[in-house]
Image (cartoon, rainbow, N blue to C red):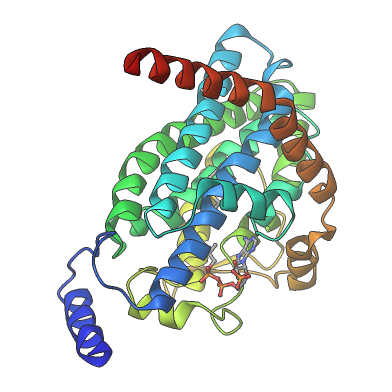
Length: 311
Ligand code: FAQ
């Protein structure tokens, strides 16, 4: 019976049909989707923190409005993704619990500090740039609720990327001090942005199976190369230098060759020992605890309303 169901399932995947919440799916398909979608949701929520640091310090009203809108979008992305994840049979409370107890992973990139305003530019340009490259293929991922969430997320990410690039453009064409700030931010965010796309294909434990299930549509290395090829000309346009002496156009492959990534640093950050891991978790758990009265009040109000309806 299960074998038969599995064959039907595989045939649906082969035909590029979307799998929906009430459809039969292999247990491993369900589990790996919960893993990836929840990590993605957690990343959006934790990803708000490094930027939240700059909302009250934005250099103008216009910049503040744009940054505030971006951070609000990220909260929204987290909520669509948690909802998509819940359709796989896990509750929001469990997901939050996994994040708050440090059991769940979220993207390594959000464990770096945001020390100057230029970091808001670099995050939008590079981190959202990498996120778009990773997420556009996910619009055709096989699980329906995830694929549909990604369509709106990608549209919003492209606004995020442009607001970041515009900050960089302004700084790069500003005073020498401003240009230095932009270069310094690029120096600090470049390598972590490459790491964000995940370990090399050779080291990636989930890629092969996730590609077969069409959860992932491109491998980590393919996405990384695409990100580099797209970003180098943008750095040229800004007049900034990518901090990689081995970066070179390769006529034969039609791609940029690039230097060695420090994978030790990546795994340290993933395991919780990055520069800001402790602070991010503390801030996230703190926000959850301080928000308890809002949740309690909303529940009490809903109960009161329900009771009145029944009286
Ligand atoms: N950080 O076998 P793989 C955003 C883990 S965008 C931490 O290659 P997979 C927008 C991986 O979980 C950022 N851990 O895994 C934004 C696995 O561990 P596990 C979020 C990482 O899943 C922008 C192990 O290493 N985007 O938030 C990382 O096939 C600006 C082996 O790795 C997504 O999540 C990492 N960077 O490929 C917000 C996109 N990379 O689970 C605010 C959806 C790998 O066995 C501001 N996710 N690991 O314990 C994906 O596309 C995939 O999950 C990958 C990883 C590509 C991230």
